[in-house]
Amino acid sequence: MWISDVICILGWLLIGFAQKAWWLYCGRALLGCGISLLTYLVPVYISEITPKNLRGGFTALHEFVIGCSSSIAYVVGSLVNWRIFALLGLIPCLVQFFGLLFIPESPRWLIKTGHDLAFKASLSRLRGKNVDVSLEAAEIKDYTIYLEQVTQKSFLDMFQRKYLHCLIVGVGLMVFQQFGGMRGILFYTARIFESAGFPGQVGSIVAAATKITVGAVGVLLLSVYGRRPLLLVSAAGACLGALITGLSFLPHEGLLLKELCSVFFLIGVVVFIGGYELGLGSIPWIIMSEILPINIKGSAGSLSNLVSWIGSWVVTYSFDAIFEWSSAGIFFVYSCVCAAAVVFIARLVPETRGRTLEEIQVSITELEDNL
Image (cartoon, rainbow, N blue to C red):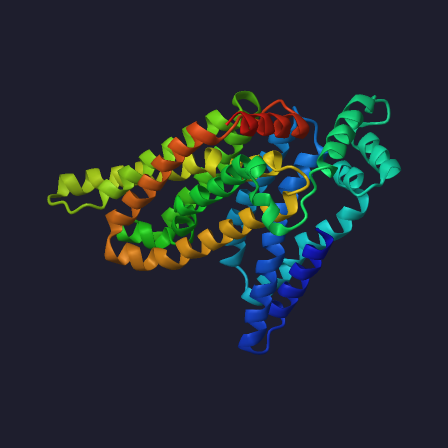
């Protein structure tokens, strides 16, 4: 995370003080590298340091803050010069860079790398001075010793049969998260609303308000109902919202029908964004950080992260052209992807609420052995 912060700081400085176009290209490239690393590393770190009863809530809160920050960034970016905006981007990077001085290393990473004393000290610091961590420490250590016997020797080892289930779940959720279309809709919100006869500013306000409100609700519900049920409801809601939005773009005649379609459009967009933010926007990162064994977490997590950002680029890059070709069709495609996500989640995604990372990984291993 320190390295990622340094990369992001360099990126913002290049953009803020850019003298030529290639400075901007280099700055954007550095920011892409830094942010993509943090996108994966932060949920993993949170999952490795938090107790099982708080893990989902903390990781969901992280995703919720990202959503709120994105909304704030859109507002600030419309008010200040782009160079000033780039320099403002340095602030969170610097806060995190220096903040990392005051937080401990992941206990699971420390025990994996043979730092036994630091492992116990880190776990005690995270749980509190008066908390007995011996049972949790023993469980983490025993599972780490087991993993040392099956240590990954190369990048391709993560494709072994015993890791196949967690790899399919991790990568599959990233595919559905991105190809469900949220990136395209958020980046082209003004364009979509203007095509439906609304001012672009209305779209930005509706999207931001829905993201923040439903994101907060998702954080509260996650620890109560668990990952899997919330994911199912989220994917089903996004499917319904995309379907309603697509229907509202179909050709229609008459003033009354036009007004009805405008109402359906608003309902569809709100349901789609709300459904997505309830679970698909954050829970895939939570589950990926939980189900991957620590010995393949680097390679399998990198693969999932790569798939996620490639999907984001494809959806963002293709949205404008497909929307121009068929305004209704693109939402029908997103609806079908979300419907497929419902089936995928129902068949393959395990519930991880209330279990330690070691318990989750043992249960997945046993499931693979029984297949």
